[in-house]
Length: 158
Ligand SMILES: [Mg+2]
Image (cartoon, rainbow, N blue to C red):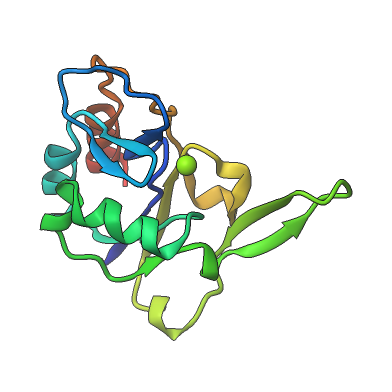
């Protein structure tokens, strides 16, 4: 049974901030951002990649996403696709702000999957939301173990 796991980046697998958080981890620098990798990212990807096909879908721009993948543990793994903001549906609010919806348009590419799961800290921006597992947002905490918990959840329940 083939299963696809679609991963969000910001606050799910990494945290990027203008502030140097002065952690043990040396952040990757991209433009004005300090990029912090979530604890256990490599272990998480190693475990889930044995059971799921992996993909990335970020509402951020392509160049940023490319840099994140290149400079974190993500660079060691294979992804079925990497979708960025260009693949999101724009939602305009009355006050003119824009939000980016990750709307899965089912296509023959997905027909072979028995199950498709999103991991995201912002399920409201995922459609269908029933396919999303809510991830506690990562803001740089060094004692964060959410990816270990998610590994157990995914391997035991899906
Ligand atoms: Mg996010």
